[in-house]
Picture 1 (cartoon, rainbow, N blue to C red):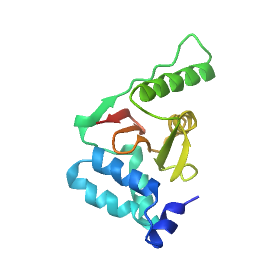
Picture 2: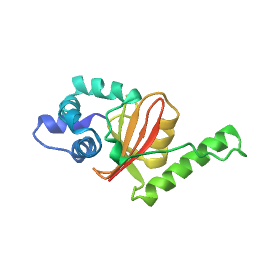
Picture 3: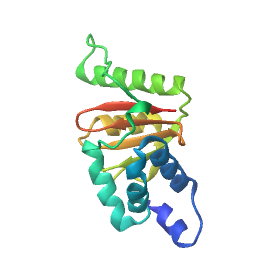
Picture 4: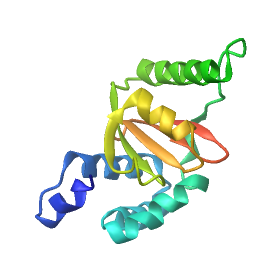
Length: 154
């Protein structure tokens, strides 16, 4: 459901819109923030932003930590994936993540939604779409792109 824009059109700023803006302001290089904030402000331009997420290179590296995949190799492939998601979820929760997160993604099926953290991680890890999961507005997020996985934290 793409309700953030319907709220914005009525002059109401929904918490999700504030969350997306806070995430961009906190973790994106200052010289690119204005551009990306303008792109997320409308549904027509939002796709330009979310399409960039697969190979996004505009994070302020002072706030990023690379996250290696930590699935248990003694498990089946499915078990490894579940164990890796559980490890990542535990890392995020140890930094303050709650049970749900806000999703910005190149995957239109999950973009612009609040989801359970584990379900959102599974969707992000299982795809080639770039995804940002905002775990604590402007303070903690997870990014999964085609070639990297990052925890973004202030």
